[in-house]
Image 1 (tube, rainbow, N blue to C red):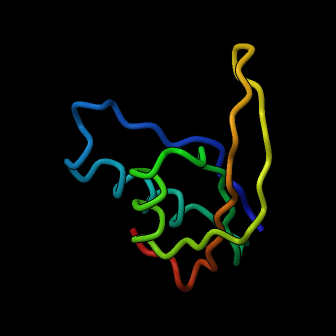
Image 2: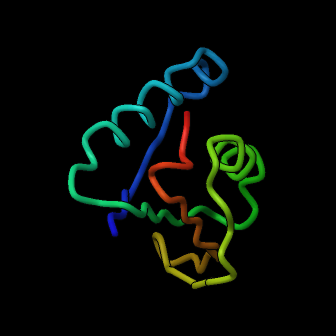
Image 3: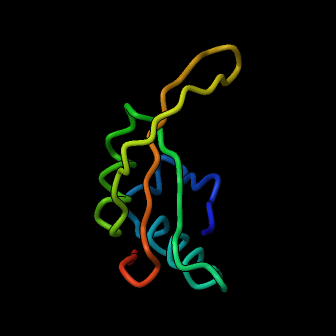
Length: 86
């Protein structure tokens, strides 16, 4: 299984297709992996919908992480590469 850590798009470019292009590149270069994992902020509904449209499913795993002294909740998503799209 592979995990990608971050995929951020400049806010002014959201909706332009660049996120989809970046995600396609992740999938295209995931040689040797059959399953991809990622973590997304629980409250980031826009990102969660983006990944869900690409075939990722929240698998029930959650974690709290601290960024700059602020605790945030994250949910894990997974997708088998054969079912992932972008």
